[in-house]
Image (tube, rainbow, N blue to C red; front, side):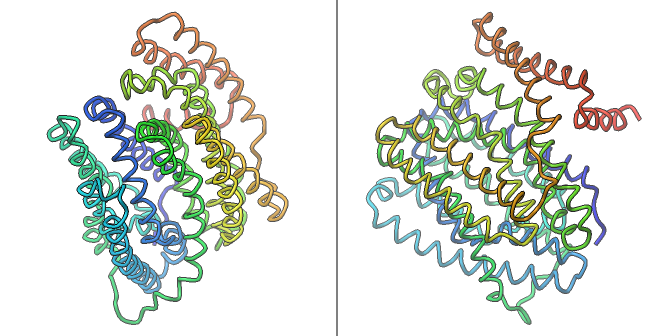
Length: 482
């Protein structure tokens, strides 16, 4: 199979990420004001609960599938067997898990009291059997992913403004959310027939379960320290606290998604290089952190400086008190992409996913203990603090293993470039704070702060002739000027 341009893939993934960022930016202010924090929190809690069931239905195939497809893409027969076996696993597990989900919903009082919402959210589990994005990522078909996502995001956006009109429409909002994230899987199957044939003979799905178990348990364990806090807030505090945490996480994840738009497209390529070209693999490992930090450091500083503006714009006055939570969690914008890079581009691509699992277990146990201690005492801020501590733990352990045990000396987070990003971001932050303090209008100070802040950041890096900045500017120059 012809190898696609890594730069084009990154551009497509940036467009895909931009679409995912634009969608909540457009809908969040409207939905927050119409539904209110409590009703929005009900949907957030239901979505979090369902995501745990989807973990079992997916059983690690999302990441495992990308790696195996990438490794087999030059052998069509082998590729079709891999594709068919993983699809069969998804279908079987989705059917089993949805039955267990219905039993839980009808027997747990907190779920049963919101029965219509939880029944609608079950569609996410049912439609999970069509979730084959791992295949298109493995063959690096990012153009299709962006086109498909644009169609379904646009439909769901229109539906939100047409059908979500009052506070008790949160169940309708839940249905639209499911459509936006899950229904596109059906289109996946139709389009996949252009590339690969689904086989039901000569396949052995069960041969994957041992290796899949490692990917599943890693994902499951990671979800403990990324999602359990919302469940605990729902039980120990209230759904309003869930809404505040979910909104903060949404904003943080939006920022994280910008950096992972680069690193995500390198997973199939890293897996391919690891199999075929060790030198290129190691070069890729050395370059990715600079691109991640180039984006995440200034965004982190910007979120800290403009947290109140962001929360007010996206949620209204009711969400202003969540500004402090966003400032606390902003550090994860840097930490989470680095942790993901170490896990997927380094450990998974090297076939060392078991090591990543052990790292995740340690981090999750730490998170669970700290959440149980801090949430009852200081509520949602405690959950935010635990999130940051957990990510620091995740990065530190994986970094130590990659450098000391696996001997990847090419991996460096502190270098001349990262120090340049930090210096430029601090100068940018000072300018943004000055603008924020001299303008009373939260909307205006946010807009002006972002524009001037970005300009200051890039200007400082251009003066330093920083290599990532110059590479990106030269690529843009050749693209638009020729």
